[in-house]
Image (cartoon, rainbow, N blue to C red; front, side):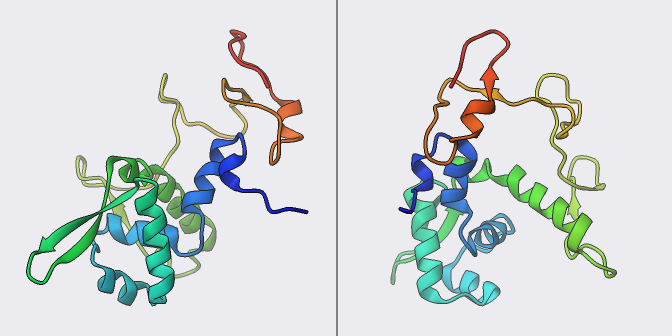
Length: 172
């Protein structure tokens, strides 16, 4: 079977995983969110091979998630910073963190605490409805075909299970 490029699948999850789902990429993003921005610091913190780090950073730059900024002119040295597109990945990382804390932290407890600056409390990521702010769970949502939905590789069966939006604006 031919390898399918995730970017070609009519699924936003597949397309996102194709960019940020490679081994090491979520940890690179974590470090960038924590303020580690220089190549050598990222490499040293993660214990990652330079060629792998270069490849992952290139992918993130190519997709507008990270950009380089000069922090020293002579000799020229750059650092990696998150773009607005990169900052929009924050909820994904916080949800991965919350899941890992719940299911994988073990007896020692979570290795990282997230504190909300506004209230000073330790918190965790929660997915809520943007309309009513109620928590979203797999039991209280339904999935429908969106305007860009279409049958094809990676969604052969999914496309047959999705119904149009209740207002009829989209279908697969």
